[in-house]
Image 1 (cartoon, rainbow, N blue to C red):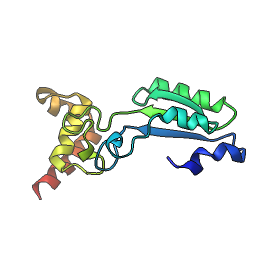
Image 2: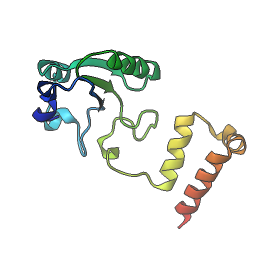
Image 3: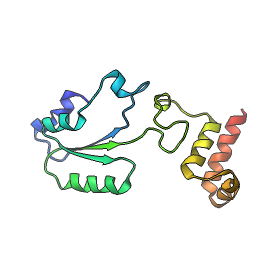
Image 4: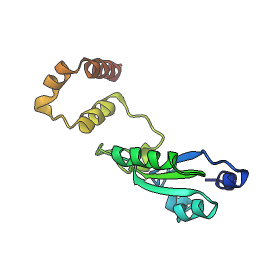
Length: 145
């Protein structure tokens, strides 16, 4: 978050919406341990932005925030509080995964956890979802190389 961005309202921009994916993690650690950005909302508001705070995992809140932003005159910041790696046990809220790609086996495990499909139902699920089957087969082939 830089001062030039914060100061955009002074240039008369009245149709600008910024969405901040605020997962509170930088590349290799938590933001608060490196350079705390709080209070985020107050900083944007101090420069003339309308600030909207939402749960970034809630599609209804996202839609309502965008509708509100569209109806607002002046620049809007939507601070979407998110959890990096949400829904994946070994990735969730772990700075290690901020800039790291999973290995093929880890990617398959992540897909299963996000979908909530257990061992007993996995093959049946793949049979009903050919796109997922193709992806998992490609990842499995990569894991063997």
